[in-house]
Length: 220
Length: 231
Image (cartoon, rainbow over all chains, first blue to last red):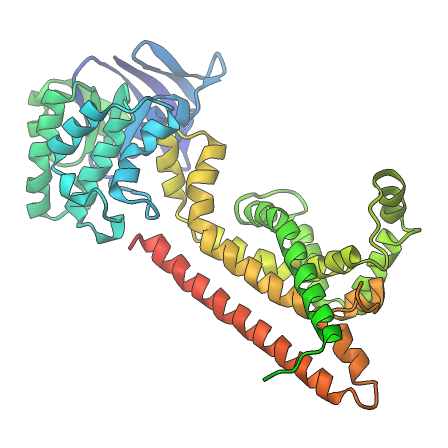
């Protein structure tokens, strides 16, 4: 599903990671500064590795030896950022449909209804992002990423900007997403409890190196 | 109220036409340049920036004279355009529009550049992750978010264009009905013994137009902030 074998020098920090995951939700775990965000940005194509390969779903998106670097917009990924990044000039419905329009996909009302119901955002559709709470924003961001029909969903600390109560509000949605949406995910977090609930496989990072890889048990 | 004579109307309408055309033609170039200056680092960027701002600090008569040398009948570009495309600037209203466009360009570009600089680039990244190619990102995210700044720039440019005097009169002279704008009409009228009343009326028109433009630009600037906050 996802194969990563890369090296990247970022100033003083060197990142060298190699793993292969078939899991439904691959958790990237590590303290801040361990290289989690750089790694997920490389999978997204927002950052270019110095050396190595990245393969998504059998499709080589980075291969420095062969000079391959597929730009982000052609990777067919979804990305949920910590800070949601909804488009402020569009309402919720337009935000949700953005990916479908950009990829020239036919309207899929059934999937849209399913996602809107799954995330409970039906009441927000004609609001602007400025009028949403943090938790609502994050749910809309999830829906927006899902509706672009990605083959891999990347989530970078999606609960990181929320307080404890909000986290508990969103977590069940993420679990439902994992069980019902049928899209493999890479989930970045520094929170053990969160990953225990969501992830099926763990890649543990420390100072730019993969220190362990395996089931959720490695989190102990 | 204001008893505006046909001759004065001619000057007012000509000014409006000149300023509208100057603004509309300058806008796409302004957006492109604003984007370039806001987003790209390239060799000679500060020189380009300085050249764009030059009409703001150069004596207008110098700008007008340079336009005459370049776009006049015997000018390098002017002769080419006249011979091959039939476009003539010298002593035509089109020349007035060119002079106004050049003179107002720095004012037009500035708000556009500032509004593009104010856009959170992470939103553009988000658009990319959703499958938007770079030019689609520009038209669906960058430009809509910069729109109030673009409009503010257009309004300011328009206001400057409608009041331009020095470069216009140097380049295309002061021909009633062809190149005599509000400013050059006022200039002629105050040199005429009994022109005070007419000059006064045109002065009031100028003030109203300029004030209206400034208020509109301010309103667009406020809209820009609201837009970026997504309310």
